[in-house]
Amino acid sequence: MKTLVLYQSKTGNTEKYANDIAKRVNADIFPLKRFKAKKLSEYDTIVFGGWVRAGKIQGIDEFLSNWDLMKEKNVIVFSVGMSFADKDTRAQMIDTNVLYDYHMRYYQFRGSFDFNKLGPIEKFMMKKAVGQIANNPELNANQAALAGILENPIEFYDQEKVDRVVTVIETLALEKKS
Ligand SMILES: Cc1cc2nc3c(=O)[nH]c(=O)nc-3n(C[C@H](O)[C@H](O)[C@H](O)COP(=O)(O)O)c2cc1C
Image 1 (cartoon, rainbow, N blue to C red):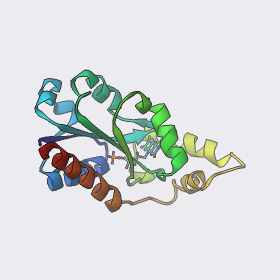
Image 2: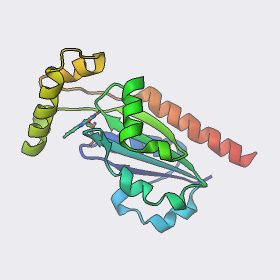
Image 3: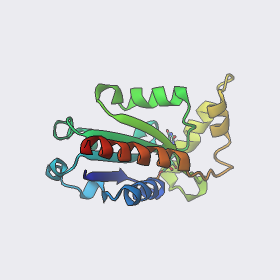
């Protein structure tokens, strides 16, 4: 079985996850922007990982625009953001990114975030978003954690999720053989 891993990453977290998964299942790997869609036909399982910006998985629209070429394949999407991967956030991500329209497996990974490393526009965006969260009197645990994000960098590597995705890909390969 041939597996392809595509990714879109800004500060390297998604790229690292994509690389780690690709290495373990012996997949071909490309940044989404450097991959020609017509080559999708060569693969049985296609994985796409994108970083999350304001709830949107970066690159997902471009990736899904080729759905017709993938609809009979195994498709796995993972997002990398600073949010907790809880039930509510997952539901929100599926909704915002219209994933419910596609037959795929979706996983939410946590990445790293350091406010001090952002450019001026992104700093402004983050301050605005965090300000809105902090003004909400009824914060859930996820929002409460985000409220402190400007002062406290997050560094997270979701080994368990990587292992899970690798197991899924290996299981799909076994199913194809039998
Ligand atoms: C402008 C901006 C907006 C972001 N919005 C979200 C968000 O809505 N949800 C989330 O979980 N993470 C959000 N993040 C955090 C990034 O997704 C996180 O830092 C991720 O690890 C970046 O992945 P990369 O290193 O592959 O670029 C945001 C980061 C930036 C810079």
